[in-house]
Amino acid sequence: MTDETYKVFHKDKNIEEYRKIKNIIHYCKKANYVFSLSNYDNIEQVITDANIVRWYGNEPSVRRAIKLLNSDNKIKEPIQVVMSQKCKKRLEDIEDMKKLTKIDFKVKRGIHKIVFE
Image (cartoon, rainbow, N blue to C red; front, side, top):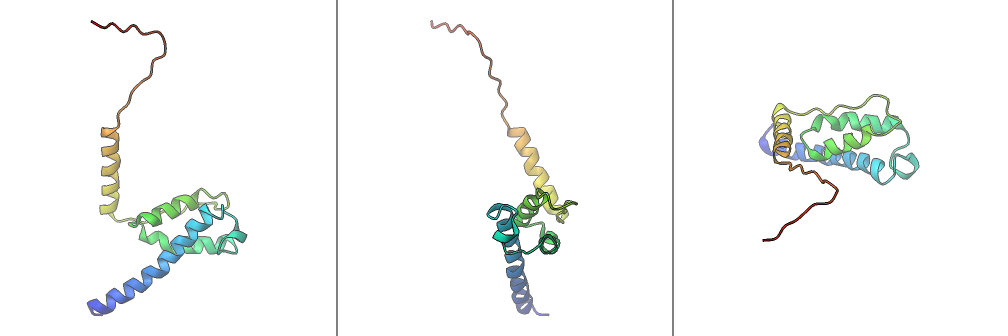
């Protein structure tokens, strides 16, 4: 397979995957987990699409869709996203940086004396 045919094949595959991702997000957010308001007829169709797109876990939209879908009460077992080690490491580094740069402050109520000189 040449590079050009791979790019065309890969691009067409991504279009179908992105449609499935959009359908899952629409089912979760806009349809509020109701089948009659979404493109799905039953929970098996949703799980089938989720199992297909979960392999593209390096994409943030996939992680978001699966996270929203896991909060559905109709799904008995949570779906795990598959990510590369490089992506996992990058996300862990981002979380570590957030923890380091997070500023904590405490609010104390009561009477405080301020002196101006």
